[in-house]
Length: 438
Image 1 (cartoon, rainbow, N blue to C red):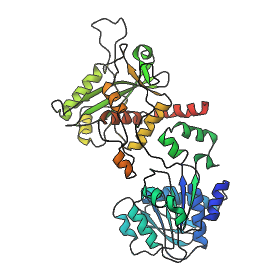
Image 2 (cartoon, rainbow, N blue to C red):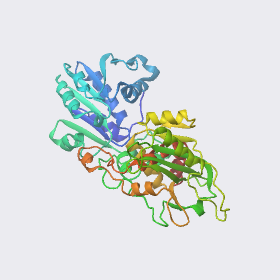
Image 3 (cartoon, rainbow, N blue to C red):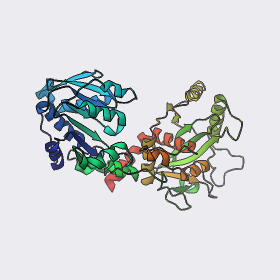
Image 4 (tube, rainbow, N blue to C red):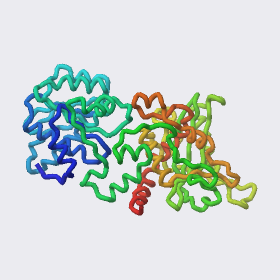
């Protein structure tokens, strides 16, 4: 096996991994997975005989996160040490048959029944269900059986934190906590970039590896007061806009449809330049064709962008057209209507909510996302700003260990997430450059 440059903490965890439950927990890219894999391989070589399982959210994630790194450790020196065909239910590792299992649905627990295990490895333990974890521990009944697991931090109310990490001293359990700075394999530039891309809750979890609650206002750094750090005025920005646009659309029939338009500035900032909204609860519901027609008309008329000072009274702004439009992934019929109407640059939005919130938070923290107002102080997207200031985490879901926003007045918030997501190739380098300059 190839030698790896390990930190003192990684080496210590490998030496000490002799408990029934061995859990490496902490931030992303902190070196915990490599440590756990080496400890697991040693257990395969010297530990109790009997069936073995490697478990992750899906077999593909097991292959990517566990088996591929194992094969890399052996490299060309021992290519037969790890034998696996992606998607297969079994692998052969160090000559031992290993069951490869996904645990991403309610039926997963049933796949364990009837097994008697000597060793098991769980990738991202906080993502498996509580019943699955309990059933897995029941299956580890061979004398000397051991469980090896990794996890990123989650809510402090998560069952893994409350029932196991917090009670490790009462159990036959060893744990090791890792932060981003614990991984000697990462470059200083990469670490700086990750730190710049995470703020608040996400910094605490993904950099410091802390199990902290998502509570209160989601965008608690947002400052939209006159003169606030996220407020920009049209008179100052007009000449900065370079004519590149992105749009996110959250779709509704009886609920509001909300479109948010972002513009790129020569100062390498994104500006919220306008919104289109139709609320089917307060007005007549519109068909997909009618909504498509009205959004296009809004863009063709300049998306409400103010005219320059001194412009002729009869002047009209030119059309604005987004190079990419990200539409609510649940709105298949509306996307189909837009395609039929010849809409260009159309994509299905990604609806990983917490990841999207992290993107917006990162841009706000770096002051790379600003909100336009006209010379009278009227916001370009007043409904979006109203929603953002009331956008909070769901306390009831939080009590169950789930990070989800309260589903109240969030249509503009979703549209903003989509527009930031679809413009990511443009703004991602800014955050990295800001980190290196810090």
